[in-house]
Amino acid sequence: MHDNGWEIVNPRALTSDPKAFRRYVQTSGAEFSVAQSIYTETNSGWFSDRTVRYLASGKPALVQDTGFSRNYPVGEGLVAFRTMDEAVAGAESIALDYEKHSRAARAIAEEYFDSDKVLSQLIDEIGIAA
Picture (cartoon, rainbow, N blue to C red):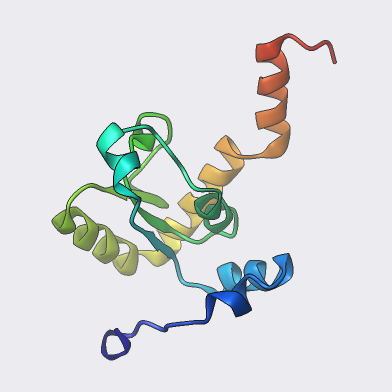
């Protein structure tokens, strides 16, 4: 992995406190994530809070699709894949226009994961008077 530019880090050092993890995400180039088979096989739509942190930090996310592409825009910023070829193509796309993917990542976070929007929608759906 080192020969291909990957850096292996100690996870305990990165998760020792919330600030350390935030620093790690914000200094990363992007997220690459492979989901557990239970999520992909059931097409459950599972989506990681870690991915949301990357998007909010303006970092592209290349993530194995668990069905979340039914609910969130994918292709720019949030790049979903199901096959190895799609993962490679997604990584190449991010590398070719990193700035576009970074802007799109932040825009997705603002549109779909902003706490004011999410909580307002939840309150509306469960019928709590504000």
